[in-house]
Image (cartoon, rainbow, N blue to C red; front, side):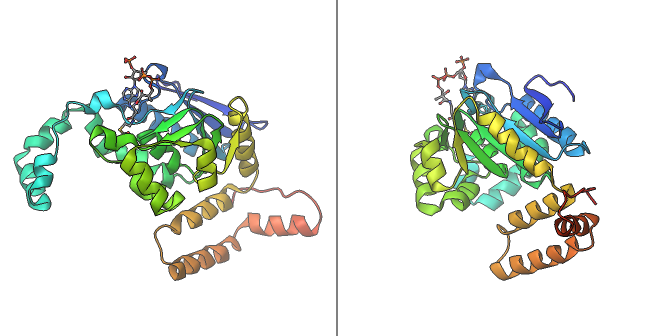
Length: 291
Ligand code: CO8
């Protein structure tokens, strides 16, 4: 595995089939600066490309999963408020043509993130391999959004989740208004986003944002255990399964049921479906080949 300045990458689990990615920028509580996001994207690409890896675990430190986008990088970016207060789309076109405000933003590293790496950052949800977040400490702003891009969130018992952007005069910009609402419903989501108040791990579990809470010290191991279990199944079928669940956000129920049925049918053309059912009937462990 590659070495990165802002993330630590390790292959873990009995069969070394889980990639553990640890955000590692302790001096800024893992604030998601441009360099960190680049490192994270590369580490994710590496894990996605590794044929031995069946699942990914993303974690931070015991103090912080991530304290959000890097406020110091964003601080001096010229605001879009002029644009927003006039007719948005007209003004947007004008600004784009003249290159005024945008030019300034483009010169900032963090805009690189938006224009180039950001789609990939957001694209964590589009990774084929399942990714589990192990959240200890704070997950604020972009940090909470990053956790929510993952497929499963486990939390340490002192974890805190929040979208404090309102206190900075901005709004969540990496999916918070959408994914939090999907996860915990409108009233709780509005309350968090409009007040900036944080949710504890226990509240987050009750609300459905996280699926399990563990002691701080065992969180990462427990998350890796679940990742190992997932990695023991057919990678092909796991990725189809993940795609189906994620599709539910973008489809009506009827479309989603249709999509699921077609992919269910598709699994019948795989070796692994035949093997899984044969192994059951023969009362033995299946030998999946990821095809
Ligand atoms: N950005 C930059 N630096 C940060 C950030 C951050 N988000 N959070 C903490 N730091 C730095 C602090 O500035 C401090 O650095 P220094 O020692 O140089 O002063 C260091 O980390 C330690 O932090 P504190 O001294 O503040 O530690 P405390 O324990 O007193 O407080 C808190 C911890 C409560 C987490 C506090 O640091 C805090 O409130 N941080 C900001 C949290 C926040 O508002 N996050 C939301 C950011 S906005 C956002 O995420 C928009 C997302 C849009 C998508 C963009 C995707 C890239």
